[in-house]
Image (cartoon, rainbow over all chains, first blue to last red; front, side, top):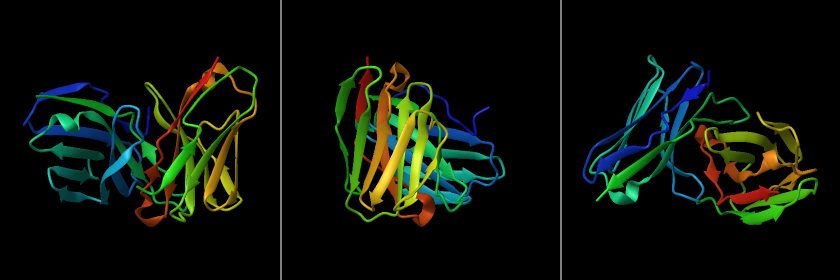
Length: 112
Length: 112
């Protein structure tokens, strides 16, 4: 079993929909949680970063962390075709090596 | 954007030949990482560095070596390339704050 599980999709939604992307994990030592967005043939770009449990909002994006359930989510409001990409969750136990563990990514398709 | 460049961006080589990929950063980040990304596996850590001349293995290090003689440069070497090393290779850097990492544009390597 992988440390971080993420549904590969694809997830297809119409423009304007609310999108929910999720990851589950097994390592209770994870403290830092990130979401990356990766467009085709590009490098991943950091989208959201959260420390420990709670919510964080940035524009149309909201990240949630529920450490008791070992579950993290990314919500996208008013989705746009430009949001079509692969979304990767990543997390870290904050040891001194600063290593991240990634999910395999969920491909999102937003149709006009 | 952490000012990360990778070279070459594309390379086709033959089985058994040595290959060196270069990552260059301009942000003076302490941590540097090499990942490979393959369908169904997501991003997997090959090697990482937590300072000049300080490196360590990741989860898929067999067949790869690295060197870091300067803060800004991190080299990944395939001593004798095999077809299983056909992949997209990403370099990432991190300052250590919050464990966030920033990615380069990637190198697409094909081993025939």
